[in-house]
Amino acid sequence: MVLLGAPGVGKGTQAALLAAELGACPLSTGDVFRAAKSCDSCGQSAVMQAALGFMRRGELVPDTTVLEIVRERVACLRCPGGFLLDGFPRTVPQARALAWILETEKLRLDAVLSYELPIEEIVARAVGRRNCPKCRKVYHLTAFPPKVEGICDVCGTALVLREDDKPETVRVRMKAYEKCTAPLAKYYRRAHLLVPIAARGSPDEIFHATLEALRNRPPPVHHH
Ligand code: AMP
Image 1 (cartoon, rainbow, N blue to C red):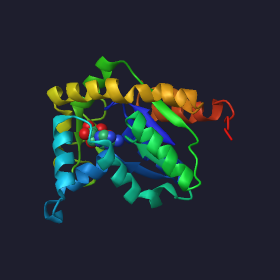
Image 2: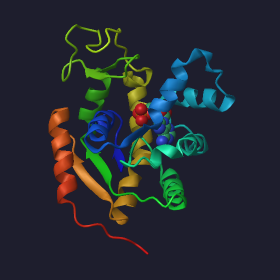
Image 3: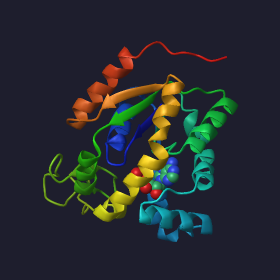
Image 4: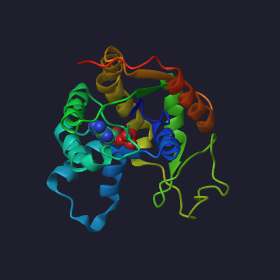
């Protein structure tokens, strides 16, 4: 499956819940870039350094770089429990490339979960988000605060505001979303894969809405 939706809508949280429920392999291209960023000793390539510059500014990383990263992780798509793509594809060319990769691998997309929420609510969510840089657990100042302010419940590490969750960067990311990613909903609706989900409520409520939407979706249309 693919998880679609604006930045901050809760795709990452839902991907983790779905992965546990389905035994599927989650792949987040954003996590790949963040891991590269936090790895000082990795000797980043020029291409990766450029990618991190785009990320810092809230812009989309070029399709060629993103596709290289996904191709390197194609084994993840072959997971027997299925794959969950979070934050990829983000442009129509990326979606076409994914279709081609899946065809080559004799794999198929079952559904595209489209998490929908008005943009003002999304901005509020993104700027209140706090991440654990060590174990990657995600918190929220008001909706899901840690037990001790600023400290990860799981591993005790100090929480951070993602550089690209800063308000001015969030606005740039929303523009990129509206221009490049929002058209993907139409692309996947045409392919009869789109499963819209109202992304309002607690993570648990949204998770149940997801399972419900998957159960109730019309039978798949296969093209030959
Ligand atoms: P995310 O964690 O999915 O919000 O991604 C964080 C940032 O990584 C984005 O704002 C982009 O700069 C970059 N990024 C992640 N995935 C993609 C993608 N599929 N296409 C282009 N840029 C991406």
